[in-house]
Image (cartoon, rainbow, N blue to C red; front, side, top):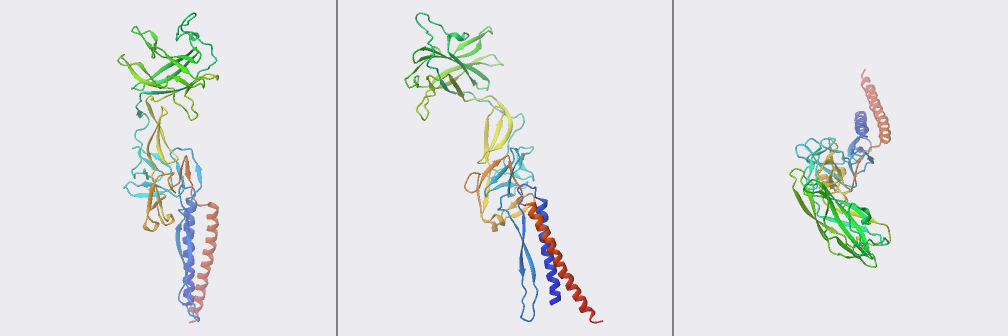
Length: 423
């Protein structure tokens, strides 16, 4: 069997190199495929029983493996639906039939029904194993929310000259006359329909460490004429200690803000609580009186109605929907899975992998947890196949294929000599 074995070994060598070339071809073809994991062809010898006087040539066999555990480089896209993982996790996805797979290809877009699908059509699953769906679309309305609290943070300039409200040369407050107060600032609040209402705050120093605060809003009288309505009646007196902290009032104030229904014309009110005595870590109250310039900030809850703008992902996998009124809603968390031996997963068309017993059991979680990895939004994981390495492997496999074909050709020529001995 010597000559026949030689030819058989040559064929085995050519088949092995052909397998390698096939894997290299796949790697080159998918060098730009996000989440693709390169194919690696490994060789092992095939040994036949031999004796000292008779050598039996064996050959070579190949095993195809996939470098699934090797992280690909990140590429920035700037698209909010593009996400990549830095870590060991896989995105959990599902095909149309409901079969679950794993993938590292994280380019997701909303389809016509609001479900998030990647470029291969697989549905993204959340941490509970359900398909992620973002309901609505352009024009979808988020209802407004009524304001219930305003947190005031301000400094009233202590070196201002007092404007007396009583006694000789008393000056009466007039919202239309800026000489009757020291500072005017506004805050926007929202009624239960999400309609914006402006509340104006006026501050007047009336004595040492004593200020007067008015809260007003612009409305109309029965004749439709614009008027300024006082919301604090009487005005609130503010007192401050030597350290600049407010000493009174220390409890929240409540104002009833009026609003006119644009359809019916009916006037309604809604209560808003004003907080200004909260202390920070240094013991300073949010309302102070020191020698620095005036400052004012009003942080109010509530918001106007908003329409759908888009979706995005947080670092820990939060699926966030944003609206035109600057509101953001978290509707779920991206679902991830890890396996003990990721290189044993079975690749399936669509840059997805099938979990099999050889890969070990699955562990489920979300980005930022354990070894699942951190999620990067606006980025994709590139193929881990390097075009330079693949072309080098291709040249080497081609050279080895030619050498093995020469072995077969030589065996064939020797066989021809043996056949011709009969003539």
